[in-house]
Length: 155
Image (tube, rainbow, N blue to C red; front, side, top):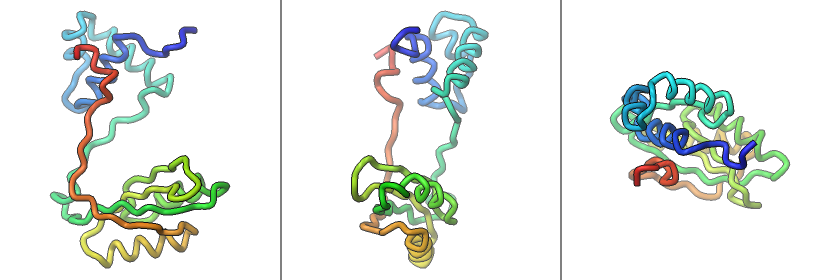
């Protein structure tokens, strides 16, 4: 098996889906890549089976949805418990994302949404009750993302 699990067509597919999976069809990708739509659909299925593609998540504008406060809560978890605590943090109402960080401290980052300070206080208390030590809390003003450049085979 090749060291690189993806070829240029796979990269093009992943880049297109990262750019806008909802509005990008297999036919659109096929036209740009010069292959058939069925080839693209087969490649997408193979990328899913390999675990390279694992989901198609909508991008939510929380402020427009009535949740004006998006916050990053930086926590420390004991290394042996980090993964379990991170997964448990996802169950706290208002938590929308959790990242495990490979450091000894400040090793769990929690994104949470709320309508007011009371929501954020409750979330902090719930995380603390799980066993996460809260180190810092920062309100997020804006967040920007784009597809990984390596996948942009046209650039």
